[in-house]
Structures are given as structure tokens and as C-alpha cells.
Amino acid sequence: MNPNPLRSNLARVLAAGEFALAVEVSPPVGPNPKALLRQIERVRGYADVYNVTDNQSARIHMGSLPACILIQEAGLEPVVQFTCRDRNRLGLQSDLLGASALGITNVLALSGDHPSCGDHPHVKFVGDIDSINLVRMIRMMRDDQVFENGEPIPKIAPEFFIGAVANPFSPPHDFRPLRLAKKVAAGAQFIQTQLVYNVDRFREYMQQVVDLGLHEKTAILAGVGPVKSLAGLEFMRNEVAGMDVPDELLGQLRGLSQEDQLKAGLDLACEIGEEIRQIEGVRGLHIMAIGATTMIPQLIERLGLYPRPIV
Amino acid sequence: MSAWVSTMALRRRLQDHPFLLVQAWRSTESLLRLLTKPLAYLGLERASRWLNPIERPIKHLLFDCQMCGQCVLHYTGMTCPMTCPKQLRNGPCGGVQMDGKCETDPEMDCVWVKGLERLEKTPYGPENLRLNPPVDWQLEDQSSWVTLALGRDQVAIGTERQARYASEVME
Image 1 (cartoon, chains in turn green, red):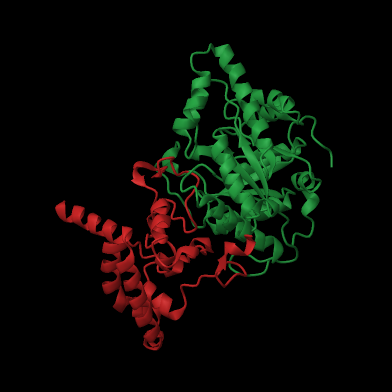
Image 2 (image 1 turned 90 degrees about the vertical axis):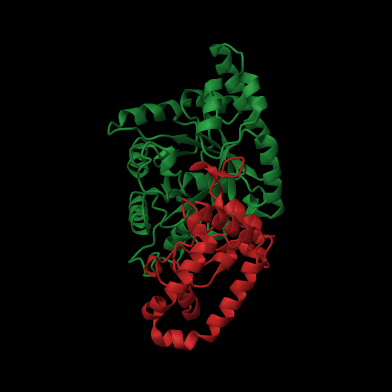
């Protein structure tokens, strides 16, 4: 097992039995770090850990690892995200070594959106390894001190707290809990889910997960996504792959003034957050506020999750 | 054009009712086990040169085979995972649309949604819990019949050489 799993604040919060909170931040589109630093000042202190995306939606951004370093220098704990889209096993491992050397222990492994969904539709999806094997590879680097080729890692093993993602909403629904089981068997210690808008479907999924006993072997953080407007919610439904936004929710925002939409958007996120907190097996929330980071502090305060525990 | 349409229809029909493909797989596997010694004598490269002219057209016709050289078809519902735009070998990604279509193309069925449906119709249902290793790209364009016979299709990752199943973490 991990020699020192508690170097991660997220791991400590979860180990203490506290309800965990992750907030996603987006690296800038360009070399200027100021946009990122402004963004984190808005959410400083509101989460236990800050996810930094890796070319999200297959759109070009500053890399997750360098952006994590900027965040760490600013005094916050990052989660570095690694997709399988842009790098092969060599590239992923060398960046993982770098992350560990810099003291970045929280890593999140994911397949990544296909380039055809983004702003570089002409590029290759690398896909040298899939997300499940990426989790396995990271676990073996840490626990067995070996590279993917089976050769030993000299001197010391890297330290990681390993995360993966899950989408409970994409078909086939019966397989989704089993795919989670595969990720847990691979070594995922925490899971961050796709944004929950369809709470009924999420409840069904969690019931299956609890029946399989997976909630005790990995910590599940459910995705919550506040939106500022009807247009924001429509964007989620139409433009983001694998998103399940029921018609009723769109109906709740329809016909309202811009100001009322903002208020209703916040109310909606609070309602969903409150409901999914009560679901058995949910150990925390993962707030992804695409284009709505200003709403995060209010949302977290209204959910009664501020201030964050010091452990 | 009509030849292409009828090929697609035949492929889909065989895959949706995989009984014949399962029988074909079983016969092929038994035959290959008998041929282990001569194939080992020839070696991977030479044996592949001889068998590829047979394997390639058949599997291309039946599965749109991409010749990865490490076939997992009977674990994946007789549906080739290398035809997934992300070439995922461990189940569908989170980008599958609510109607079961691929995130890259609203006209295309998710390869894995189809594969898992078909897997249920084969005797290999529990293989959906198998952690399939990543692809060994050295085997690309080699005959998967030969790699199977020689055991080269059992690709290792790190320290894990044996196939693992998610059932080990399930209650």
C-alpha cells in the first residue's frame, strides 16, 4: 500500500470521515498565469482540493501539471488530471514522476474527450492506454515501484493518491457500476462523477454501487454544476458529451429574466447538492462550474460546507 | 455500393446473433492449440506472413478487424474494440450520448454499447469484468492466431502478467 497516503489533504479529509469538497479550475488559454490566479482567488479556502483540467473538452489550454504548480505556489492543493488523449505511456509516466517530484500527489486519470469534440478536430487521439490501465499503471508505479514495462523505478517510489472518473448517466446503465468496479480493482481510491442533474438516475446508480460494496473501497465525490442561465444549462446538455439534463430542469429556468435565471440556477445547484449529499455512499462533492466560478462560494456556503475542516 | 451494404448487413446480423461466431471462435481456438508446435517452430513473424492472407480478409469482413494482433473479440461480444474511435478495451467511455451514440459521431452506435449487448448473448458474459491490458503495439499487423497459439497475446502491464477481474473487489 501507499507508504504515506496522508500527504494528500483530500486523503486526510476523507480519512477523518469529513464530507469532502473538490472544486474544478480551468488553466488559461495562453501563457499568462494571471487568469488562473484570479480564478483561484475567488474560490480560495472553499474546497479541500482543486482539480486542474487537462485540455478540457479537447480544447487547448495550459497544461494541467504546470497549472498545478502555479496553484501549489499560491498555497492551494491541486489534483492533476491526466487524460489518455494527448500522451502515450512514456509521456504519462514521465509527467507522473515530475508531479511526484513536485509534491503533487493527487492524480485523476481519465480517457479524455475525443479531439473531434474540441478546437483541434484534425489531431490524433493517442489512446495508447485507457483510463483503467492508466489507474493500474499509476498504482503499480507507487505500490510495486515499477514502470509500465516492468522495470524497477530506481531509489524511491512516487507518491500518489489515485482518482478516476465515472459517468453514471451514459448508457449502458447496467454496466456503469461494473465499470466503476474495474476502476476500483485497478486502484482508484477516489472517484469524481459527471455532473448530476438527473438525481433519480444517480440514486439508482449509487444503490447498485452500494450493493456491490464499492462505496467502502473508494470515496465517491458527486459532480455538481451550478449554471448562470438557461443558455448555460442548454450548453451542458447539447455541447458536453455524456451529459443528462432532464427537460424539467430546463423548464424551471425558461421564461425567467436574466437576473432570476441566475438566482434559480443557484437554487437548483443547492437543491441538487442537498439531495445527493443524503444518498448513501456519497463521500463528497466535486463542483464543476463551467463559466460560473463566481457562484461557487455562495453555493458552498448555502450548502453549509464552509469553512472547510482542517485535518 | 450494394456489395458494401450487404457486407455491413451480414456483419451486423452475425454479430447481433453471435452463435455462429462463437462456434467459429471455438473451432479456431482448438485448431490453433493443436498447431502450437509448428507455429512456434516458424516463429511469430514467419507464421504471421503465412496466416495473415487468410486471417486478415476473414476478420476484416466479419469484424472490421484492425489487426492489433492481440484479439479480445470473445471478451467483448464479438465486437472489435479497436473500431471504437478511442480504441478503448475496457468498456464504454463517459462520452456515450443518452441515445447510445458515439460522442464523435451522432450517427454511429457506441461500439461498446453494442458489444456489451452482444456479450450477454454469448457464453462469455462474465468477461465484462476482465481488466484487459493495454495494446502491445509491437504485435500490430501480426497474426492474432499466431500470438494466441504462442501465448504472446497475454500482454503484461507492470507487474501484472495474469488477467484480473473486477469481481475481486465486488461483494
